[in-house]
Length: 448
Ligand SMILES: C[S@@+](CC[C@H](N)C(=O)[O-])C[C@H]1O[C@@H](n2cnc3c(N)ncnc32)[C@H](O)[C@@H]1O
Image 1 (spheres, rainbow, N blue to C red):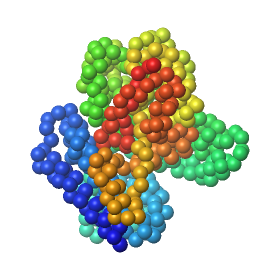
Image 2: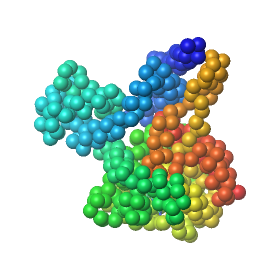
Image 3: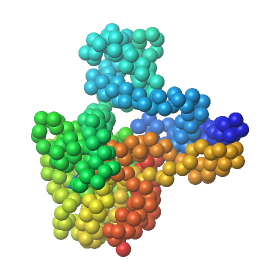
C-alpha cells in the first residue's frame, strides 16, 4: 500500500508540474517561427518549442502509467490480448474511408444508417467497430448512433499519404502474421540457415523491396502504396520539424547531400525551403526513381538542377559524382537491415569519402524500471524521470517488430548505433532528438 501511495503521489506531482508548463505554453500562444508553423499545420499544440515538447512526452508516459496503476492488472493484460481488434476496426474504417465520409457529409455528426450506406458497411457492425475505436480516441459517438471525427480520426480524412502509411503498417504487417510462429521456432532452434524474417517465409526468400515492385498478383499496387506511405510517414512522424531540430541551414553553401535510399525526395522537400543553398542527390532503386519522374517529385528543384534523382543500389560502390567531401544521409534506411547488411551499406558510404554522415533514424533509449518495491525506490525512479524526461517507447518498439517482420531489420539503441558506426569507420559526434517523432534522432557522424 505504501509503495502504491508513493507511486500515485509521484505520478500526480509530475502531472501537475509538467501540466503547468503545457498550460503556460497554450496561454502564451506560439511564436512565429518555422517550428510553430509546422506545429500549427500538424495540429500539435505542444510542439512549437522543444522544452514544452519534452514535457508533453513525459506527461504522456506518466498518464499511461497512471492509467495502468488504477486499472485492475488483469484488465491491463486482457485488453492487450485483444489489441488486434483495434487493427481490424481501423483497417476496415480506412479502406471504407469513413473519416472522409464524415467530413464530407456532416462533420458535426452522421447517423449510422447514412454512414453505413455510404461506406458500404453493415449497419450493425459499423457502430460496434467505431465504438471500439472511440476507446482509443479515434472517432466519437456524439449522441446515440451519431458519429463524428476526433482530432485523431480527422488525420485520416482526405489524407491518402497518411492512409498509405497506415495501410503499409496494417496490410503487410498482418499478411506475414501467420508466419511468426515458424520464424520464432526456427530462430530458437539450430535450423540453418534460419529465415531472415517472417516475410522471407511468406515470399520464399524474396526481399521485401523486390516483392513490392515485383508485379506478382499479391503485390499489385503495393510498390506505389509503399512510396506514397514514405511521403505520409513524414507527417506521421513529425519529420517536418527536422529543419528546426537539426540546423541544415548552417551547412556550407553548395554542400551536396547524398540521400541514400531517399525514396521520392521527402528530405529535400523538407529541407530546401529552409536551406536553399544546399544541393541534393537522391538515390534509390529503379522503380522508385521512375515513379519520382512520373509524379514530378521535387519538380521545381529538379528543373533548377538543385535536386537530382539517380538510380543507385546502396549495396554497390557509390558513383564518382557522389564521391569526395559530400554529406551523406541515411534516413530511416538502416533500420531495414540486420547489422551485416547495414555494415555493407555504411562501408560503401565510407569509401565515398564523405565530409559527414547524418543517420536519421530511431534510437531506442534503454528500457528502465517502471515499478519499484519500496516508497524510497519509487521516489528515486521518478526523480530520475524528472531530471532526464522520457519518451513513450510504444512506436519505437512497434517499429522494431515491424522491421523484424518485413526485413529482418531492427531499431537500434544508441550503444548499438555507436558499435555499428565504429565498425564502419565513423564516429558518432552528437545526437539531436527530434520532437513529435516516433523516437527518431539525427545522429551526426564524422569519418575517422
Ligand atoms: C524506409 S524507406 C526510406 C525512404 C526515405 N529515406 C525516407 O525517409 O522517407 C527505404 C528506402 O530504401 C530504398 N531501397 C531499398 N533497397 C535499396 C537498395 N538496395 N538501394 C537503394 N535504395 C534502396 C527503398 O526503395 C525505400 O525508398
